[in-house]
Length: 330
Image (cartoon, rainbow, N blue to C red):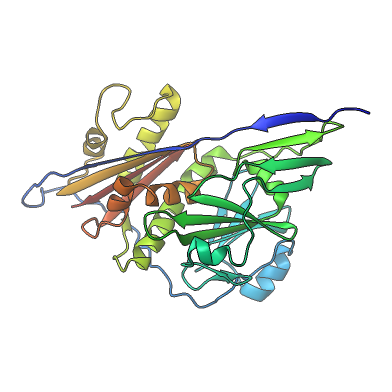
């Protein structure tokens, strides 16, 4: 009898928050952001997803119409983003669903439920398992912010707000194969014959650009839930944020102080941003912008900036697995 081999994949993510304010007294002549785009958070009109895993894109289009955004995700995922849900495709079929909008539900699991309420409907285990690729995969599931559940053959990822009663912030529904492709959780797998796992590429430039814009959408949903006015996009702050994310990635560090000793506010000044108050959030190691925003929501410092009604503008920058937010008010 041949013995099964065991392979382990581990993951980690870090966040940091930093806030700083400067009172200027009055606007400085000749400095304004002429490229802002107002993002409105839509009222929820549906209590369920517009698609099911496995649906063809033509079926979803006929049922739900065209989305507001077409975004590129990691591992050749194409996101169709509607008012209140995101539908992820690969090769023309739905492989992933996501929402963070209030009143959205999936099989009775509703955004805003507590973890206790969710687990009356879904059984929790610290090592959920799926048999895929002719191997048995066991996923590390001991976190409190992100929890994995089995729902038949599907996987549900629940993102909880540990600073507000463990309420459900967002819900992701995926085929279990996506857990392996995208490494949402660390895992081990056992096999007799080494499994053949398909390899999908990532269009890094598109993911970086569109992921930054998604941070604005996701942040404004969280502000809407707390009845805080939405932020408007600043292309200047997006550029300063991107430069910080890229600097951290290139020089392999994680800090609010840049590799050359400058501060985030030096970057903002270089983009001719004038502010009365400003702040920066950074994150590292998250799979995508969805997880980065929920990571910030679970840290007191980040959350304070992200939900601060004093801030009016936001620019975000993504580079690889580094994420930066620059908030400010002129």
